[in-house]
Image 1: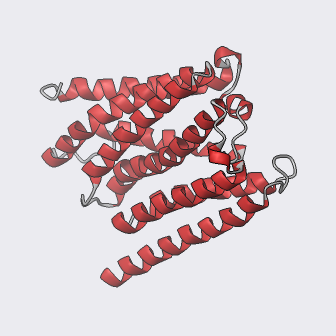
Image 2: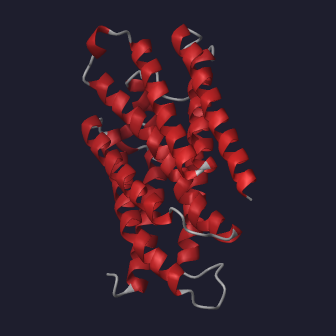
Length: 264
């Protein structure tokens, strides 16, 4: 397919449209008679954020849509950029695989095939790691930061958190009792481990956008735990741990901002 860049771009467009359509139908129909959120509620997971945080999917799909239009020629200058075309071709296979895995994830999730959904989530995560590696250290102007870097960085950040959540849901589904530790204790540990993963990425790659996604997710978890209509402050350890990890994420972002400011 690399010998036919136009065909590759068409497949990228098709798999993107397929992914967005299936994700929309998941809640419109809904698929298997249940919404995506109802499946989440079926497996009580203390790591899951409050419902409104999932609105970030709209942002992700909108930004990815911008990338799709950009890679097929819209918003580009008339001058042919060989390096940009090579970049699109490098990203394309991983974008295609991740979009197909994302589409299949919906069906696995709605059919309560939690182990399969986790394996598919890991495929998405792997593809986004590969794309992040392709984009690392690339020099982008503002337009390319918006249309290339931002879509995949935000997507990568959210899938990192979603993978952790999918793992915890799988453990709930098999009734794993965590070596005798209480559920809130394990969740506190997962919150800290997740925050460390986010902080390492933020500091290592000076990736503030990735950190913003983690911050959004962790705020969603904290709000769910203090919300009277949700956990209603039932788990004090998590209510203590979540703000600490949020502060850790904010501090790492401030550090990166100040470091970049000093460099420039």
